[in-house]
Each structure stands twice: as structure tokens, then as C-alpha cells.
Length: 440
Length: 199
Image (cartoon, rainbow over all chains, first blue to last red; front, side, top):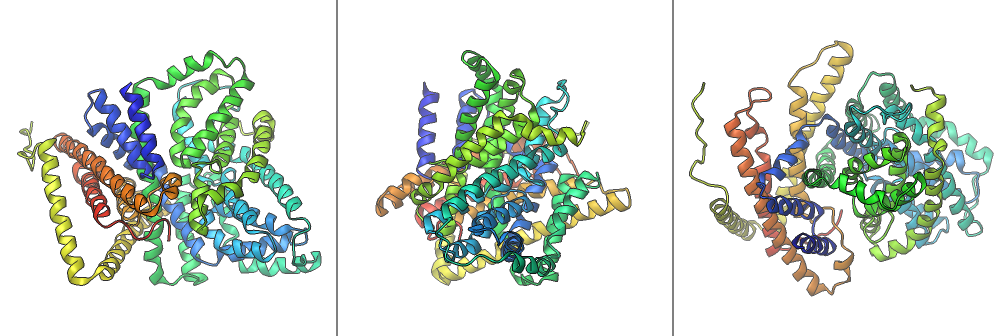
């Protein structure tokens, strides 16, 4: 009873705008107190922030992301994409989405895409005659489109957390959630999401676009110069992927290389950023990292309590009562993850992975497919009112009230929900590529 | 067998005693802050703080980047590595987390939900904001107490995971971090942040 009351109070203060790490941490402190466990237990869990190598990738990718954001990379990326797609009517919407997806993948999905690309794309979209609400919705949606493409940090974290929780179990062939397999599995669903959204966007913008489209030939002519101007940025994904797939680098090392590479390219080669601005960028990016890691640390504390209290087992027992087959499980999973995605940002959302995996195994769901469902769902959850993270970032970035962003993102949300159904109920869409690539 | 080590602040017990000391410390801190603001003005204090943050973050990041990049080179080209690089970098992640959290506090940039608050009228919003900051300060004070207990335990264990630095030193940011967070949130109670959200 007291637990419920405290839970409600916590929800209330969360709604009123208390920092989420205080809500999670306070919840954990209280839960431990009731069990008569010292408050140092929460701190012990927080100290785990210093125990995992994979977490080093978070500051690295975020720093690189802010460097790209502060430089002229977004311009070069948009120029390159529009030289390729400019001949399609209403193509700026497509260009915006593709450029955002690439940028998200570049920066490991650390949440800077809207901040970085928004300032450039918003005025461009408005100039092309897209109305403000529509542009707002589009950019809010694009903020997490790259989650499924390598070297997305969320995909890496999923693989890490999932592998931990199945270690020692014998999995069916092709089901082990290894990162190289997940990277391959995410490609087709990721492209599919962009295709569906672009089809919708272009239909919407059909007659409205004011400016003439770039003729095919003219666009073609610009491909080479725009490639040349982005000559230092284009190789980065190949270096990272080549390094990881070639077995030369771990993911953390790839993150380090990305950060160093970004620093050298943007500051020393392109000189987009003067040296004296670097400390400010470091401070700016590390503030975000601090906010993310504090939530992760506090969430460790709370998860630890939940596992101590055997919550996963209880959920499984409860779920067995009304979920009878795989399809009803997948449906319930979709709903649950949408809620999770709308409540948390991606790194805290990882705390539900160990809770879901035992159930997914029970219903014979491939864990690689589960990872793709998980991330697609979170991507949509971030757009789900009232708490979806993208909605808030977008509201900050564009200085619009969050309620306006809700309305703007809603149509995109509905389109994505349809796409989610396909990704969820058609496992081969995700699993076909890793299978033919023959990853054992 | 080494004799049982003596704690540095043996007399300062966790719990009420620690919390009272913390409260006194925070009060003194606020007083000094008020005097400094009065002497030098808000803007200059702000500028100094920002510069200091920039320097500290850059320092941490630079060490992280150098060590991990050196490790990549060593591993790939010389097939070797330095044992203490990795734990130092991992520890820096923890320090960066707290430093970032402190900065996020002073500019009200923690990840939070602000739907309901936006709907409140201006004056109520400010009152609610102050009340919540007070609550945050309370939670952080409680956390500091937990950190104090944790560090005392680590001190008694006496583990030295790398470079001969004991765990209670390299993880002491858990204590300083929460103490400073308590102080920062109290500052927010008295002088609420002027900027909200990413600049």
C-alpha cells in the first residue's frame, strides 16, 4: 500500500518536472529503505558507471556528434543528399530524413540529431513551402530515424545487455544477439521506415512545394563536387564499419576513433571550428552525457531492486495468464515498449531488456528480431505523448510549446505505427539479410 | 596482517550527524556565494563558472581521448597495451557524469518532463519549481549520506584497482558530486535558474 502511494507521488513529481534521475534515485532509495537495506546500495550500483568499457562510447560518440553539429557537416550532408534526390518532387522531406538518419547513425544515436540538423533544415523546409507544423513534425520524427543503422549506440547497448542476460543459455541457431548480426538485421527495416515516411511526406507535400525541383541532370552534376566537399566525412562510416567487421576495433575503440577523427577533421582540416571553441563544445556535450549517465546510474539502482524483488519472474507468471501465443506476445510487447519509449530516453529504456528476454524466449522470439522490434518501438515511443523524448528536445530546439509538437508529430506517429506492425509481424524482413550473409 | 585502518573522519557518523554537518556546510556555501555575487556581480561569476567548467571538461575529455586512442594504436600496431589506461578512462566516465550533472543542474538542463509545469501560471510555476528543487536537494543529501557510507566501506576494504590509487579516492566523486548537487539545488531554491532548456 505504502509502495503504491510513494509510486504515485513519484509519478506526480516526475510530471511536475523533477529531474528524472532524482525520481529514479529517490525511488530506489525508498525501495531499499523499506527492505532495510542501506542507502549505500544505490551508490554501489551507481559506481558501476565506472565498471563497463562500453559506456566509454557514450561520451566519445556524443562529443563527436556535437563537433559535427557545430561544424558545417550538416550543410555538406544535406547538399550531398539533395544532389542525389533533388529531382524527386517534394524531395526536401526525403532529403531531410535521409540526412538525419545518416547523422544519427554517425553520432551513435546519442540524441543530438534534432539539435544539430534542426537549425539548418527547419528554415529550408519553410522556404520550400512546407508549413511550420508539418516541418516541426517531420524533424521531430527524423530525430531518431537512424537507430537501426550501424554504428548506432542503442543497438550496441541492446546487444550488450541482451548477451549478458542470456549468457549460459543455449539459443536456437541465428538467435544470439551479437552485434554484427544486429547491424545487418537493422538495415532493411531501417530503410523501410524511411521509405514509408518519405512516401507519406511526399504525398502530403505534393502540390504545395513552391520552388522548382532540381532537374535530374543538374543534380547529377553536383554529385561530384558535393562528394568532394564532404570528402573527409564520407569515409567515416566505412572506417568504423570496416574496423568493427574486420575485427580491428571494438565498438568502444571505434567510438574513440570517431571522436579523434571528428576533432581532427572539423578543427584542423576543415577549420569549421576554431580551437578556442572546443572547450565550450566539450562542456556542452558533456552536460548532456552527465544528464544521461545520471539517469543510467539511478536506473541501475532501481533495476537491482526490481531483480532482488524477483519482479521479472512475477511478470512472467502474470503474463502467462492471458498471453497464449507468439502473436499476442508480440502485440503486448509493442504496447509495453511504446509506453517505455514514451517514458524514458534510450539508455534508461535498456533496463527493461533483461525483464523482456525471459518472456521472449518462452514465446520463441528470435533475439535479433527482438532487438529490431525493441529499437523500432522506442523510436516511435520517443514521439508518443505525453513524455516522448523527441517531443521535448524538439520543443526546446525550436522554441515551440510541447503541445504544439504533439499535434505536429501525430500523423507521422500513426504512419510509423503501421510500419511497426510490418517490422514486428514479418520477422524475415529483419532476419533475411543476416541469414544470406551466412553469419553463423 | 595490517592493523585495522582508522577512518579519516572517525567521529563523523553517517546519518543524522553527517546530514547536519552537510546542512551547515551547504549554508556556509550559500553565504559565500551570496557574498561573491554581491562583490563581483552575477554576470562575472557566471562567466568564471562557465570558463572553469569548460577547462575541467576539456581536461577530462582530453585525457580520455589520449589514453583510449593510445590504447587503440598500441593494440593494433604493437600488439600491446597499458593495463591502467582502461580503468582510468572508465573512472573518468564517472567523474564526467557528475560534473555534467552539476552543470545540468545550474542551467536546469536535466532530462525532465515539463508538460504539466508549462500549463501552470507563472507565479505558481516558480513556487512549484522552488519546492521541487528543495525536494531534489533532499534526495541528493540522502544520496550523499549513502555515498559516505559506501566510501567508508571502500576505505576499510582498502582495494587499489590501478596505479595504487585506492577505490575510495578515485570514486570519491560519488560523495563530492552529491554534496555539490545538494548545494546546487539549494541555490536553485533561492535563486531559480534564469535559463531553461538547452540554450
